[in-house]
Every structure is written in structure tokens, then in C-alpha cells.
Image (cartoon, rainbow, N blue to C red):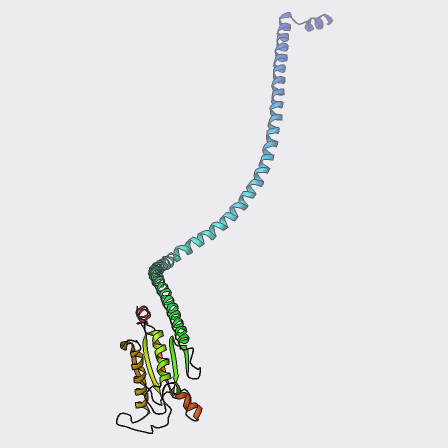
Length: 306
């Protein structure tokens, strides 16, 4: 029996070799599987790392997405507002176009008015310059006239210095020289004949003005209101008396050298008194002869006429 057991436990060499070969093969496969398992584990570790990164990226993307969604909502609101404004603008474009056309017309009208105003201003500037020139000319003429009148007054005053102040006065009024001669210097009461003293005064006056042929000389006779006592066919009243006295004085001036064409004889009688004829002194002052001497004003009148 023991022999039988031992014999059953004995393995043949061939079988052993087969088993050994299977063992070697199994060990090789085990090594290969182990290598693959290590690689697979490494791949799994890499995938887990990638998965973690993907999760982190997903979290960041989620935050970015929420931010983007918020911005998108804000932009959506702005778009709605702009769209509403655009639609309103389209609705109002017709009115805006009409307003623009009206404003354009108004602008053209303003430009036209501005051009007319500019032309008017240019014309006014030219006119103003011309007026200023004429004003300067007029001022110069007036200055020359005033100087001429003053010189004339001084010349006449110097010529009559030897006569009393109550007999005659020389003054300038309204651009003219007034020589007022009292009755007592020239005439006796009611007379038209000039006394010798009066003739002398008139001759000295004529000497001062006879060489100035551009003068206009008005001789005016004046009386008081006392009626003429001795009437005649040629003298009925004070008016006649004043005119005839003026004529007598004018003839003396002409004889002394004054050109007759420069003289005008006139009488105003009692109708241009210096003061009321209510007293003897006042009446005496009213009985006078005024010689009004006016320089030639042709140049002045010419400027004023232009």
C-alpha cells in the first residue's frame, strides 16, 4: 500500500516542466499586470488631479458666469433704455426736422439782417466821418468868426475911447457888434441933424470899419414914446423920426468912407425900448441909435446849408 502511495506521488519530469513553465508564465503575466496596475494607478492619480483642477476651474467659471450674467442684465436694461430712446427719437425726428428747417430759415433771416446792418453801419461810419469833418470846419469857422467879431469890437472900442461911457457903449451880442449911441451925443431934441460931436464919433467909427468890406451894417433909430412935437409933411411920428435919424447917420458914415452897399438904415420908433418909458431917465436911455455890425457869414451859411 505504501508502495502504491509513493508511486502515486511521484510526478513525471515532463509534467514538472510544464508546471514550471506555467509558473514562469504566470509570474511574467503577474509582473506585467503589476506594471499595468502601477500605470493605471498613476493615470488615476493624474485624472484625479485633472478632476480637481476642472472642479476649481468650474468654480471660477461659475463666478465669471454669474458676473457676466449680471453685466448682461445691466446691458439688457441699457439696451431697453436705448431702444426706447431710439424709438422715441424716430417718432420725434419729424418734429426735429421741422424745427431744424425753421431754425435754418431764422438763421438765414438773421444773416440777411446782419448783412444789411453791416452795410448800414458802413454807410453810417462814412456819414459820421463826413459829419465830423463838417463839424470841424464849422467849429473853425465859428472860431474865426468869434475872433473876427472880438477884433472888430476891440478896434471900434479903441477908436471911440475918447467918448463918455454914458454917451455910447460897444458890446458883442449874438455874434454881432452893437454900437449904441445916446441921443445926447448925436441929436438935439426932435432933430434929425447930427451934432458936431456926434459927427466926430461917427467919423472915428467909420475909420475903424471902412476898410473891411465884408461887414453888414444896420443903423437902427430908436425913440421914447413921447409924440413928436413939431410935425411936418415928412415927419408925422416917432417912427419917421427914427428912420430919418438913421438915414442921417448912414450918410455921415458913407461920407467918411463906408461903402453904401454895406449899409441899411432902419427905424423902430418907440417899439423896441430898452426899458419901460415910465420915467425921464428910462426915456433918455430909450432915445438912442444902434449901429449893428455883422461879419460876413457866407462861409458859415454854406457849411450849414451842406
